[in-house]
Length: 85
Image 1: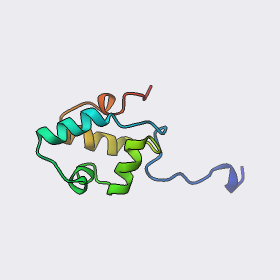
Image 2 (image 1 turned 90 degrees about the vertical axis):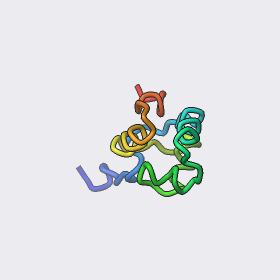
Image 3 (image 1 turned 90 degrees about the horizontal axis):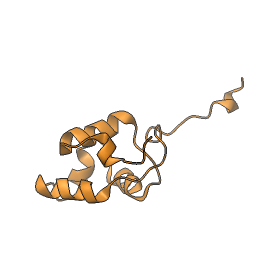
């Protein structure tokens, strides 16, 4: 196999590009008084542009990132990213 047959993946695209359940995400953030986009991104250990891309479904999170968000919000990863099979 050549180096070209194994393209490097971006750190956030380990899961398929699926959309974050923004309704649940925003509701839980509000309930926990996490109001700024910076703080919302911080709970998952990402920057605001990455969170924005999660919201739009442009990229999916690595499993460890999805788990950080879910743990911080007290919900399951399946509820936050329901399109994952």
